[in-house]
Length: 170
Figure 1: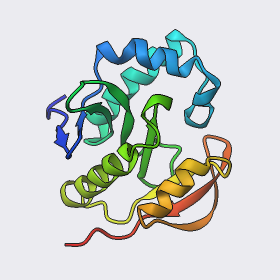
Figure 2 (figure 1 turned 45 degrees about the horizontal axis):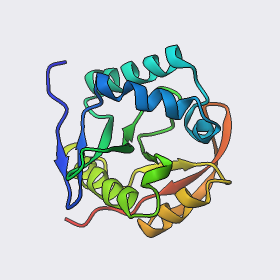
Figure 3 (figure 1 turned 120 degrees about the vertical axis):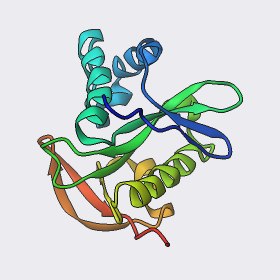
């Protein structure tokens, strides 16, 4: 990689590079059915490949997924960022929180920071989010973020809804 993955700090969170020490937590998450909306379940080898892919996405695209860490406790809470693999129609703002981190506003805080970074540093204004129709928490978060339903879609051979985020204020 030529450029380091930037670190973003919010009031309560640090958005940081994925790292090797995250692997046990990721592996535990991807072994559960809870991971089915983000490419799981997956075994330890597949999870290792997912972690390597996250780091590689930054190297290839110059943007990617940050891992979300609580600033005071250092707890790894989930991830947020801009993904754009070949299967996507356009860059996507995506997020996932682990069960213990839900319901505390962390996803909203992290997604706002990632979206603002993408607008300022990547020229990516008004990204989309791919959301499974059954994922009520992500649908509610997209709406809270000001995104609006745009159309039905398919990503990675799975049906989804495509939500469009508003342009960031200058």
